[in-house]
Image (cartoon, rainbow, N blue to C red):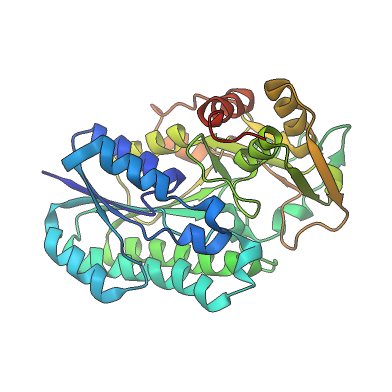
Length: 355
């Protein structure tokens, strides 16, 4: 049986990947040691997700409590499964640019060195496997903030007719910008994934995600914008809003749509590819607009504390242009907009996110 190896397997994208590729008949090996609880506290633990996967999928899923920084353990895993590994989905990460400044060594070792560990083991033991890396739009640093933006009533928008009016594509420079330490580590991993594709001929892809979201997110303040905003609205928590008058814009893509994109690449892989991955013009929202949607869904006012200074490296406006991916994979379709995503998050968590 073909094996799909998924890192960060209890997280949002990891758990969706486990279910998706198990649904295609593959045996899935998950690697996850619940580092999210270490990063963001017990509220952000993914242990509940691990329990759900192991109980619902049975023998089709094997969970390994392993740290991707542990080269010896990774080598044992890859030695065991070898060329049966047809796919590696690398979704494990330290995902917050704020947190990275607290422990730079930890951030770099997880995001950059951990990725290198997985690439090298894939090259040695499963060189024909498809390697999909969850990268980030933070590899562009704060360069998107230099775009000519117009302030509207509820959001910032790019000037009409600008080349990026349809969204930011993969040709945006990664140089001469402030990335945050998180962005630097993820950029190192991103380039390494590309290089293993080009230098060794491996079938690799970096998906530079915007806001990846869905009902399975273990929402925390430092990571998980839409899910955490919905959690605050449902639990009556105060949402800390950092700068830009609340008009900063994010595009968001549902984890289901992320995984159908991954499957498309898996079925027709390329070497050393890079794709921007986000909601694009179909699914984007400012914070002010998201509060309004959350209030309509929950029937309750949101509690917001506005903090004038924006977070360092935070994007003022970011919408992904996925034309390159659509050109390569014309059969892929995006299925969810912002209201439907937020409604699904609400309905899935109504039993546990309460005041």
